[in-house]
Image (cartoon, rainbow, N blue to C red; front, side):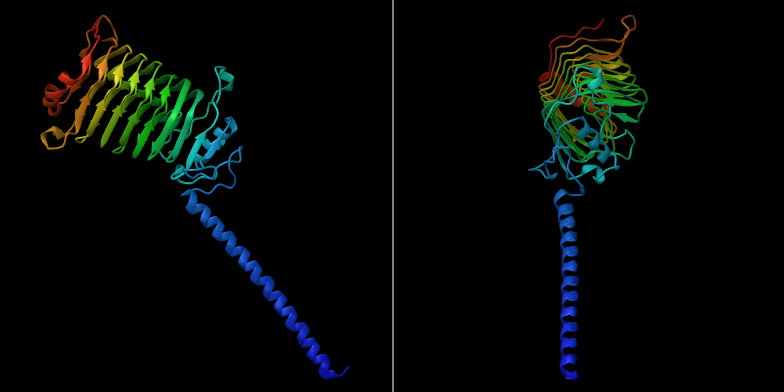
Amino acid sequence: MRRADLSKKDALVETNNNESVSTSFNKTITNIVISVLTVVGMFLIVGTSIYSAPYSSGLGDGSANNPYIILNLQDWNDFATDIAGQGNVANGGAGVYFKLTADLGSENPADRVTRPIGDGSYGVFFRGTFDGNNKTVWVDINMSAMSLGLFCRLDGATIKDLTVRGSITNTNQCAGGIAGHLQGTSSILNCSNYAKITANTYAGGIIAATDNGAVVTLTNCHNYNTVTASQPAGGIVGNASSVISIKIDRSENYGSVTSNGYATAGIVGLITGDRPFVNIFSCVNNGVISGDYYVSGIVGYIDATQKAHYLSPFNSYNIVGNYNSGTIKPLNEYVASTCMAGIIGKATDAFKEFVARTTKSKNKIFYLVIS
């Protein structure tokens, strides 16, 4: 073969090799780009979280229409790890949806949930949406924490259609059946607590306390077990502190609520804030409420630090259509308690005119016993 032909052949082979290398390189780049876009797409779909894998059921993508499925105790513990920031979910699950599809635990204490969502510290919040799907979580949670509940702290979260049974005890500060602390715009809907709640400070059958200008909505929530604290306690909410607004409707307490401090009530122990918007209606207390002072069936103490909104055109205080059929009594039957009532134990001066104008005429006291 002539030298010129050989040169042409070598050049053709080199060209083919270059084309092969170029094609392979382009395919590699394309695959990398597709992988990156897929991950980014997952991030955008799920909000602020990226899961390397779903829970044991293998179902769900964390969206509203296809939530992550929590099926068993292992899933619950993985969920707790994720929200604590030690797993695959970021920012407390903000924008992520979870759904419980089976009861967790049983009457046997050995089978119960012992790990709450969050560790009770200030920096760990649940910020997603949890659908209890009308299931029950049996708990045996006994810890020393700043805040304790099935969910320790909520911030911009929604919890719905969930029942808690068993016991929750905080030997340090506050405890609630569904949540310890709540802040941001958060809602608890159609939830019931049958767990015994014991706290060293605040306690509530549903929520122990609120923080940082919370906007709180509780609808159709019920407490059926004892709530015990050394400071404000309520069958539904213990201490609604520094709220922007609080709305509680169609909620009931059947459990005994006891505090050796101030502000004890069947629905809310204490409400404070700078002219907070308060809406409490169609709520009922059927339990025995015992405390040292500011004791009542619905609200123990309302402390509006500034002039109340009733002086403005806004109707910001609506405490109407509530009923007390429970017993209101001193903690110590031999010592007279201060400020005991069927509906509101005490209100600050800014609130008194409102109380006189509306509360007495629109709420009912079925049964009041002062021992």
